[in-house]
Amino acid sequence: MHNTDFSVLMSVYYKERPEQLRESLDSVFSQTLLPTEVVLVEDGPLTPGLYNEIERFKSACPQLKVVRLHENGGLGKALNEGLKHCSYDLVARMDSDDICFPDRFRIQVAFMTSHPGIDICSSWMEEFEGDTANVISIKKLPETHAEIAEYIKTRNPLNHPAVIFRKSAVLKAGGYKHFPLFEDYYLWARMMVNGSSFANIPESLLHFRTSPEMMKRRGGIRYAITSYKFQNELHHLGLITRLQAIKSSVIRGIVYILPNNLRKLIYSKLLR
Image 1 (cartoon, rainbow, N blue to C red):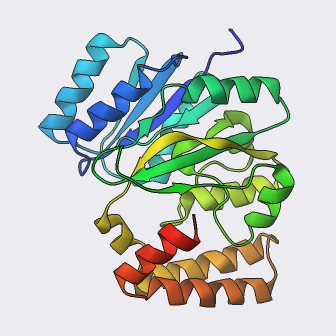
Image 2 (image 1 turned 90 degrees about the horizontal axis):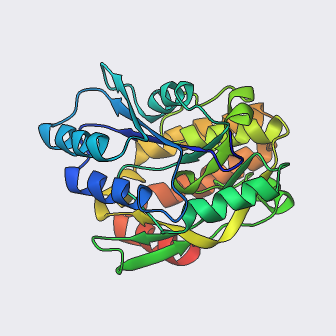
Image 3 (image 1 turned 45 degrees about the vertical axis):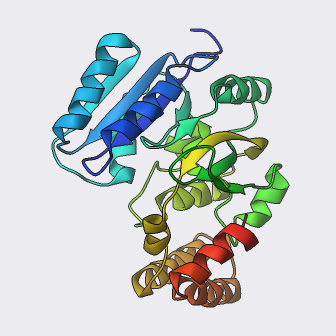
């Protein structure tokens, strides 16, 4: 086993568009450092178009391992199942509609190899609509573990689609657990409490696809209620105080029930 051996973990479900999956996989298989394996979880039955794309890549790319789930169980369950099939401790996450920068894996694997004490690391990402040239915002994050340990109390400290982690550290914290809308943040919180070390690479390594529909999903009463429950969970984990949980719930709740245009402005201008 070489110290650059690593897995890429992806999940796809029926609502994804075949051409976006193709762009995503193309960006994975044209990296300057190619993955040793790519584990793609089919989260329930897919469309003929998606199956066609997957078959095409299976024929051309022997690194691609497909894991088939009989029913759609959501991202957390799919990723947990996929983790079981990852052969290497170093695992890079990738979403089936995003696009990697060509050097993403080379930079991240080199970072993790030269920082053996770091358990999980992500990077900045460029959020785009339609075409990668149409950048809406750049989602920047704090760099060091100390900064991240403070940041995690109020905001998600890692860009999930741009994450690379040590599988052993993720499993030690219990893996992904069901918490609608916050499954990744919930995992980072448990890893932080569990003593894992975090980092972010201060450059964009991923094109993250966004849309007006995604902004709509990030709002509304239901989202606000789920967020309130999540803040309570962070308090139970000992990550934040009761007062911090209440304060965060109020601020987030106000943002979530704002009209879409206002919320989009806050996300793109104030939170990036």
